Length: 146
Image (tube, rainbow, N blue to C red; front, side):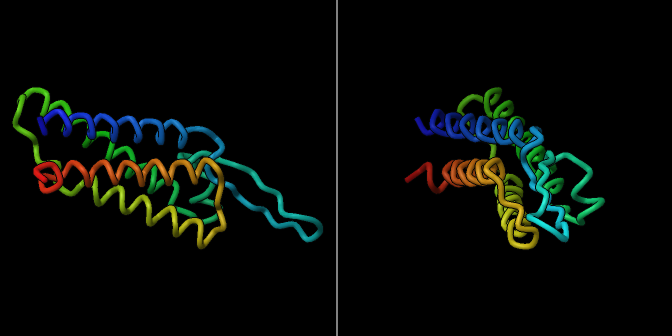
């Protein structure tokens, strides 16, 4: 019974990460403020995969979050494939996905704090990463046996 619960949680986690990835590809993720002497600052939005924030504004967190998200997607997909082939034996997911998701959440908070780069897409990506982390924590062996 718990094998089915494990697979459902991993599929939900993979779905959350794929939705997060599609939002990160869109050019509405990271706001970049350009301050002008007169009037309000100009705001332009770029994708998480854009080279503008790291090269011009030294904000490396969007590309870091994107790379960590790709690692999580690949790791969860590999875990699903291995578990589907094994049948009832569950592959230990390790701590790679948990650590990558925690680093994504911390990098998002750091980016918001240092660069005031809060956007709706960034908030949705943050909440999807938090939900994926909760799904990852729920698939741990101690939680499934209780």
